[in-house]
Length: 168
Image 1 (tube, rainbow, N blue to C red):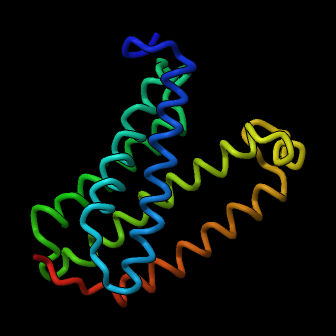
Image 2: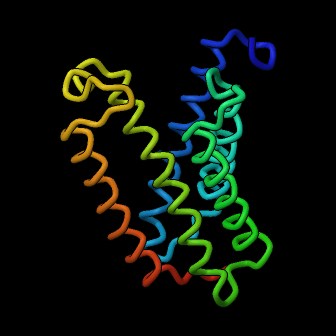
């Protein structure tokens, strides 16, 4: 049991929250390329991504005495999201806080998508057949992660150059 839910229900809820965060984040990311602030979707993206990182710490085997790579991703994501929220809501994207927000928000989205790709290779039978090791390490997995990384680098650079919203 985790927070009163059976483990499978909790994990399903965690995955749903994560997918909502990723979809909202991708929409926000493309909005940034057009300087569109999207305050409602941004709040959904940030809050669900925070929830994803926080709930991830409660899923076994993450609740362990051993520090795992997933712990590092969780802590890094929560730190980036704290800075992104401060830049957006506390500093209202003034001055350098604009690019700090873009960078921290989109890197946290990238980390969430990175984990999505890993989990997809672990859980989707067709992908797992291409990269059966745990964690995945075969060339198809590396190619998929490389494509995701290049995509995010290009979009982050574009967003840093173009995102100039009027903060109301």
